[in-house]
Image (cartoon, rainbow over all chains, first blue to last red; front, side):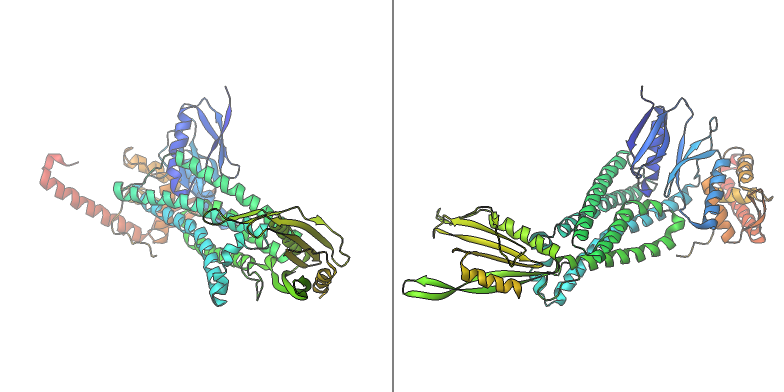
Length: 444
Length: 107
């Protein structure tokens, strides 16, 4: 028979009575709480022979400093003298166990005072639950405001969507923007719990005790979000370091660590009624700071023809006309094809642009018009490196289009430092006049 | 938000003030409440801590001295008046009840 076990154990302060019920059920089955943790999402139990084991939970103040610790110690001494030993505590949750042989009175015995206490706990919880929602909302409102200030063009071009679909595809921003709303998940779960608690209190007029399975659900949501956020944070940091943008890296790091830590733990640390006033003002200050960091790192940094999605995403896109001599039915003439030049903020970003262009070039495209007419059936061989003396790196690929107009041509991608040129045209691109035009653009 | 002033006392508050008719520390208060109520009323440590802090803030009790880290509280004049007012209120309530239920139904 196993002597220890780990169980999912995540609580919100307003469910502290559910924790008590759960622990007493475990005690009746012969399991004693050994410790809460790690990450406040698991608890370790061990077998016990005690038949008189009883648990009582209460919310403790989370106070720093000598005076604060003295207050907490005074409270714990009273509990000890009243027959309750502190088994473990995490943040605001204090788990007490009765002394062997003792049958003490519950820690809270004044129902009216306890109900008032509980209402305050619930208000504090609501505050901390709404905070991550407010931060995410602030980010999107700010993005909207920036877009509107830019004359609305940025918004029409879809700055927020550009994070996902625009380009260059900055994977750090894609991952981060996709994961950021995940912060809402634990908050929404807790918001649902609070609404349930509020309705039950109105109906029964007493402190509701949610079912223990609510803890497991909460733990699963929290752990999932925590893992996803950590992955996102790692991707963002790696990308930021690659791009050499330390300010961006530091900004994202501070904002992320705070958001992750805050959204998953602070509510549990600071929801004791005594904590309300000071912690709320501190919470608002931190929320403002985090929102500012997020907004600055993800939104500001774009000007003019830049992406506007952050310093790491700055690039300029210019369509250029490359004049060429063409053989026409009535003799040689001048025609033009349009190439695109990307002036990137740094070389790392230019390499991302190349990756994206390369992917776009090799992606097959098939367009069938209504009635079954095949308009386009584009396919491209993988561009192969080619030697251009004036470019740091270049690729050339052959494409065919078996559609209605049956065409074939080449795609050319070239990078010199932070400048990228892209050209796809139904012609041979290794011709001297085309290459000369390319060279001029790269060296400009 | 300002804390609501005490108009009437709950049973726990009443027994706490009653127990402090003589100065005492936390554990002694809990014991006295048990004795005074003949085991009917139990004062939990969490409730006791909250009420002590509240009564001290409202001037009903003061810290008399500290002995071996134990804080010993005593009633103030305001606390004594509050207790006596509550006692008289409870007596009137009992008298009113006696008038309805008859003398023999008095507790």
